[in-house]
Length: 310
Image (cartoon, rainbow, N blue to C red; front, side):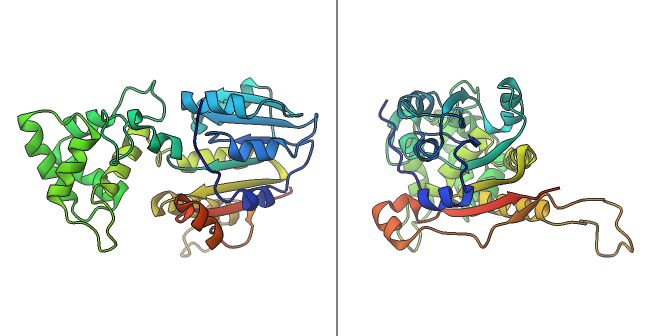
């Protein structure tokens, strides 16, 4: 399986995790296993590496890429929202570290048949897990105009959401919109290019992908589950690629790192909320050298945290 994906901020992730050779580590977004391979190479025969991914192509690639490691390796096809159940099934209570590398992979973008990219003409699909029933074709052809406007604005931060949604609804009265090329060309005719020359379909494709895969609605809960599973002193590293998911990660970690979360007007604390983590330094971004060698790294941000000791 040729799963092309150059791991972003690899050195920074390894430093953030502060790996223990005999530790237990969870990669919640396995992909082609670039991060996982580097983690596994630093574990000994007593270490354990668990990799999760919902994409069957990723599972095949990771199985090949993670062969020959000294540590125990378990690869599970599943969504990171299920990490509690997956760890329970493996008989694992607490872990030493977890990592999330969010968003769409290079392989998914480059593999035309997956329907993620406006650069390739392919059936509208965009499912990371092809067992899921909802496809991009369903969203584009079945959602009413108001619902399309909502997801384009909320998930794509698209300024021309109303204009694009109206054009889609008008076009599908004649015939269904079947391919990424049809959708991209329709958007090009409807919305102007950005000042920086970016493709006008970029934000809509992002919005539809997020809707199809439910990416944002499960993120905060998954991070909380991962933190709950960390041993005292365990580390969490999360890479984001756009402002929507980064905002969720930032706010979730901030809440987990603070004590009382009662409104300031309350005279005494009634929430009994306790800090469970400390945030490790400021958000990190790729070096200019990495961005030059891997343009898809340019929007990446890494946030890290450590589980507090009781």
